[in-house]
Image (cartoon, rainbow, N blue to C red; front, side, top):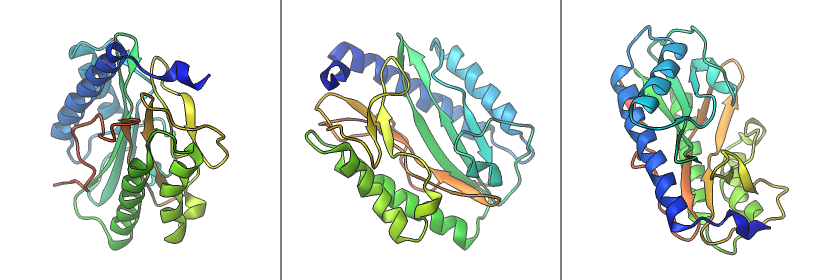
Length: 231
């Protein structure tokens, strides 16, 4: 039943602590970004800092993707080195008290071109629209459509190749699922992600993700979703 995924105050407190750890680790990652650093080095830093800050571990295999690697939604970090003009996607999470967090940001390293900026802006608009549609009683497919329709209208519908979100709790993926085929309805007290993306093979990928408590509407993360450019 859907209501077994509604979170208690104690569960929410643990998830907020996990999200706070993730936020702090992301701060440390941003401070460590430099030309020539590898995807694998940043992923290792995320694991190391997550443990140092008291979490039990990461909640899934960390994704760090530079440039064209971002076109793979589940990219495994490699020894690819960071160059200026690349977009960087980082998908990460922590486990605290058995409960997970889930967070994705895409940022720019150095100046990016017009297409990269346009794709980011489209995903940003879609993510905001999806977040705004998450509310008790809303069909999960309607929340998905709020984000997906913006991406499709901009001409990138075929490059949005996954659902808009999923529940989070003890498991990193649990009901409900926000996708076009979902028959579920959002319930107050569930925690879901909103994570639209555009993936252009051989070129780039952009994904932005926040967790949100259904009925509250405020993201768990303190990091905003405006495009960040590191120099």
